[in-house]
Image 1 (cartoon, rainbow, N blue to C red):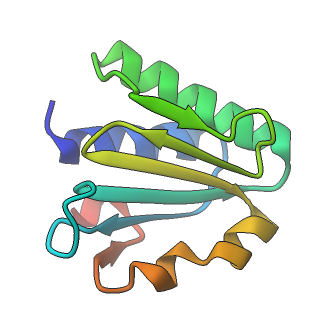
Image 2 (cartoon, rainbow, N blue to C red):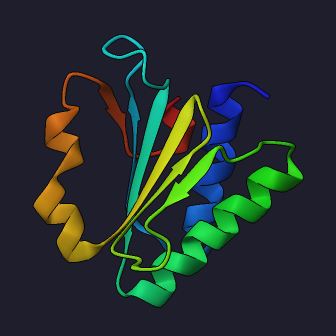
Length: 116
């Protein structure tokens, strides 16, 4: 499965759990770290964990293995590393504090998965 297909599945998984302000940042031209970042937030730790669980379940069914998950217990910022796609799920306040969109502003940002 290519990274664009993974992004579409992860985006849908986040959306299914009412993820808010979901953004996709194409960082292929600015970093070798990954092809895409997906950033979303939830209103509380339980929702953030549910979003992460849904992403993991849907991508696993599609045959994508998560290399590493960080921050699940705190659920302030969960990072899910799928090699070419990195999913960041925040509680709202932490997302504003870390402001990854500003840090990665050299990448191309999409707010709709259909724009890819």
